Amino acid sequence: MRRALAAMLLVLLGLVSGPAAARAEPPVGIVVEDGAGVLDRNRLIPAVEAMDFYEPTRVAVFTYRGSAEDNLNEEVLRFARAQHPEWISGDGQKWADGLFIFAVDPVGRHVGTYMGEDRKVSLEQREDIQNASKDLLRDAQWTDGTIAGIRRGAELINQPWYRSTAFLVTAWSSAAAAVLGAAAWLVVRWRTRAASRRELARGDASYSSVSMDLQVTELNAGTIPESSRYGSTVLEKHRTFLAKYKTATELANRAHALTPRAMSRRPNLKLVRDFADASAELDALDDVIADTNALLNRGSAWASAWDRQLAPFRSDLAALEQMLSKRHAAGDSATAAALRSFRDESHRDIERWSAELAEGTTSPETALDRLRDARTHLTELLKNHADTVIAGFAKTDREARLMREEMDSAQAGTKVRYGRTYEPSILGTVYPSYYFFSVPAFNTGFSTGVGSVSTARGGGGTTGYGGSGGSFSGSGSSSSF
Image (cartoon, rainbow, N blue to C red; front, side, top):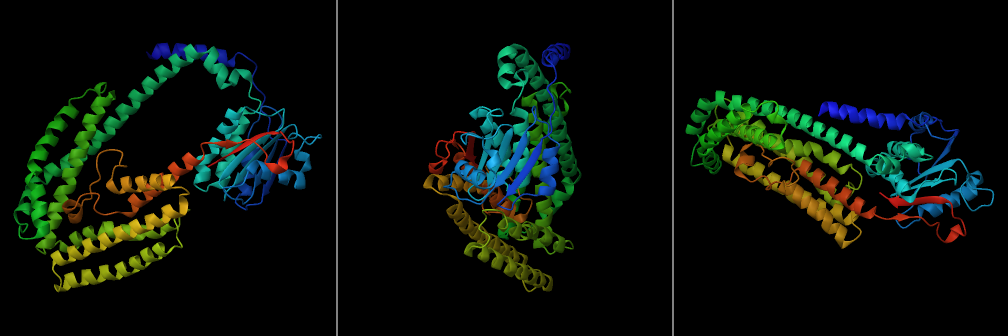
């Protein structure tokens, strides 16, 4: 297979390198009109100067602060007529020859591309150029998004026929398909084998830890008070511990029996991943059993065990400000203020709970109840803030439903790539993974929700120049991001 792939690559490379190499032409001029004030010229201009076009091309960059209802094409033409008449052809009907304009409206969320008649590309290629920038623009990376769009434009404007996608698809479809198919097959097998090895190493580390601590885990479980609500639930989990350990052992034996070649197959990657997940969950559970015994019985390690119970809550509190500072996160809303107030109050509560535990004036059971109630309150505050974010970003009921679905699935844990989430704490063991809404889950739902809505909005492009464009018919279009 490798020899066949090499042969096909030589054939394809021979075809590609047959015609004379295309010329590399740096831009003959760069104009930046950053009306929106969002670009870093010190990075943008050198990056564009380093790009190679196929023909000498003047590059213009235009930004302005508009609205979602604006026609970016019309705004670019209006600006060119008023400030840069040299961007327009002598008859006033087209864009000037040799010109490529890249435009961004960061407020109205539009991106546009415009070319002289000797530099114009197809509508599909204009969309390709715009799409190359959208992921970065959605993340408010205005300079990087602009660079990515211009770079894609340099690759497509006046592209030689033998480098075009259409030519590669139509003239060399059979060879390309064979090469790509063989390459994809090899890449998939290589990546699968590498992933299997990583998962096997992960599983071995957890399984070894569980095996070494097996007797200690049994001793810890034997002294957990069954009268405790938390202790009794952890003990229920422990009753299945040995059965799960036996299952992990069987998976370990099957995983280690795989040959390197067998580890390149997708079904076997699932087997190894199942072994790693099973071992990791056991490793986390034996830690929880130890912490439950230490905390409820106030053993010598109770303070460290209590700190581990606080860790997920502290992590959420620490991540709140970064979450609220994101674009579209409604950081100045009433629900954001409620989250900040709760954060400050919770820091004081944590100190008080810990001090009372140390003094013996509060029982471990009561401390866990307080922590549960605080995290439940945070869950409600995050849900309220999710409503605020959705109301502020969604423009239609359909968009609101889409964002709500993403938020709900993030809280439920269905956005986890492999397996389910498991929090290695007493509360994480007693309550299901979806019981508490964490800040990382909120961020996941927020990001995917905004991305899904933005993608849905960006489905259509605009090619006309509006009412003020008159008879102007220069090559160009814009779309939403």
